[in-house]
Amino acid sequence: MKLKLSTYRTFSGTKQVVEIIRKKETQWLIYEDDKPKFFVDFFDLEKESNSMMNSLVLCGKRTIEEVLELINKRNNINLSIPVISKLGIKKRLKSEVIELSLESLPEKWLDYSL
Image (cartoon, rainbow, N blue to C red; front, top):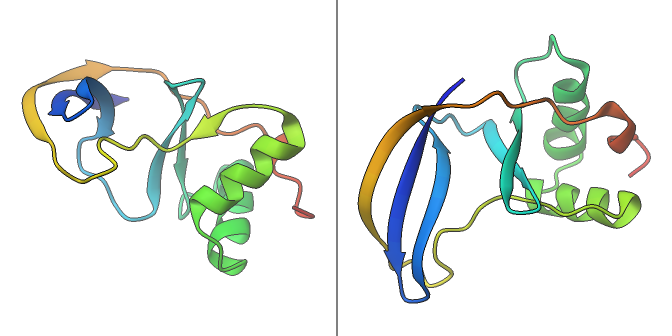
C-alpha cells in the first residue's frame, strides 16, 4: 500500500507520521506501539475485521478512539491513531511516498461484546 511519510515541526520537536495519500473519512491507519501496523476501512466489508469495526464504531455510535481504548484495555496492547500536534500548530517540512504492508486488525481483538 502506498502511503505518505510526512515530517512535521511542532512545539515538541519534529515528528514523522505515516498518512493515507487520499484519505476518506472511513479509513484509518492504526499504530501499535507508535509504529504503523494496521489499516481499517469501515466500508470495505469483504474483510471481517472491517465489518466488525464498522459495527463497533458506526453502529455503536462510538469514536474510533473510544473503541481503540476498549481494545487496548481488554487485550493489554497499545493501539492509537497518530496525533501530529495536540495544539494543532504544525508545519510540514517534507513528505515522501513509501510502500508499507499493513494488516487488518485481528478479529480476536474485535469481540462484539466490547
